Length: 232
Length: 232
Image 1: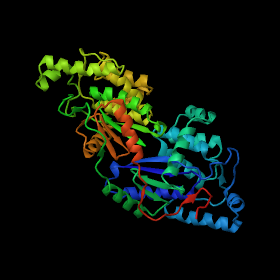
Image 2: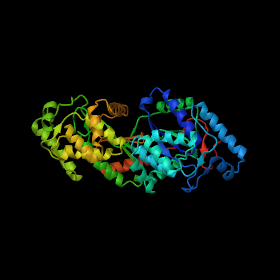
Image 3: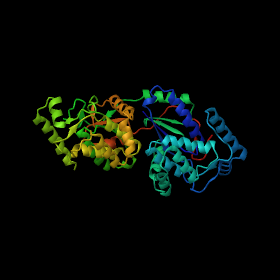
Image 4: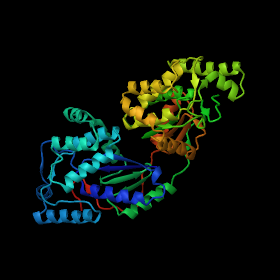
């Protein structure tokens, strides 16, 4: 079974939701048969690369919230993060374009290091004060995840590298009906939105597992080899 | 859309089928939205590592065919391969355990080089006379595909490396009802067996594309962030 998770490094519920999903997966009997793929989704796809502002200011200015409301929002997420054993700082965090982070996450995916880099990026963004929107910070995280520094720098230097992969993920999210993240899809048949409690993920995994149905054969059998060595 | 292809480097119809599938995919309008994953399947999972014999002898001895029948089988495949522009030698090829090749293919998958290594292994096995069942030949192919030699040797030296991944692929093939290869699965909903003509693959891709259905939501929306910056 395959679970695809659309998320953004700038999305606090994605950070919390990844931990909850992994806890829910731990409790699922067939967890060894589950493959997890992370997919790109930008909360703010039109944000320009250098446009980095403090999160609390952004919440207050762009979305018309008072500084108190913005801080209260952050406190709510922080409480949820802490309940999952995750660090969360409510002051001093930045907000910016996550496009380059997604591009490097696609490189990490090709190298089998996607989940590792995503965890490091989440932790840097939500539990630390180093800005993941700074290329040097991002390179450092990618290298810690196990990527080759030169490869990471090559991706950052070429704006077209993995840009298509990011856009394809986002197009798919829209086609599947996602309006926000985190967004979880099980075998392209079942969907689940939001950073649900771990038990909800376990139940969703069980439902999706039960709901697997026999394949629909789209044509008669063609030329094949079977385990008896017949290649007729 | 995701297409999974179960195959074995020892399976001539998989070799021919991969080329036909890729031709069929070329003619599919939404090919940019298709992700292809190759999965492991051994035609002879009980074959011991060093047990390498000429293919024609194997066909004749193990499956009770006369040398003429064995050669005729090879000629049939060769004609099909040539029609796809693929090389095929009917004499001098070896047959052996493909388990280690599958393990190295899983390493290649993690490095984004799976299709490249599979192509090189097929070509070596069917269009050449170097034995892919020889570790040094396999290392050479893997390096040509772009893998780091030390990594490949480390996998070959550790029989447990990616062994679970190979077995998991094979278990899934059985669960999905595959009795032979190549075996093609579209979004885990549609199945197609054998090295079909390219047009059949294009049609299957079209049918699977049309047959995509809305996701079944398994729970009410949880805590999420939307593209308006709301993380309520």
